[in-house]
Image (cartoon, rainbow, N blue to C red):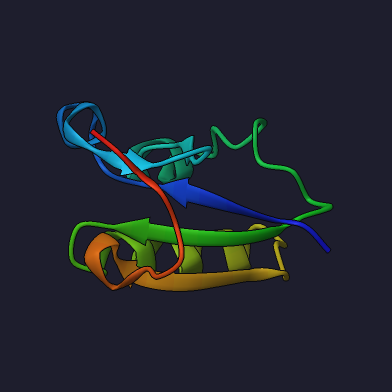
Length: 85
């Protein structure tokens, strides 16, 4: 199954740098159920700056029925990806 990275940081953080091909979906969007852009047929890997927001997003998505998700934690701990600046 194909994986997709989801960056849950704010716009200014995303604009500074992010993982190539990642989907940008801020934590507040997930908390307000604005998740139409999230594919249910892919493995979703969440990340943020330190891991706190991605952990919150993971729990919220679980309550919304997402099962194939994981938390990569802070962006600097994600390996084997291309960073866009």
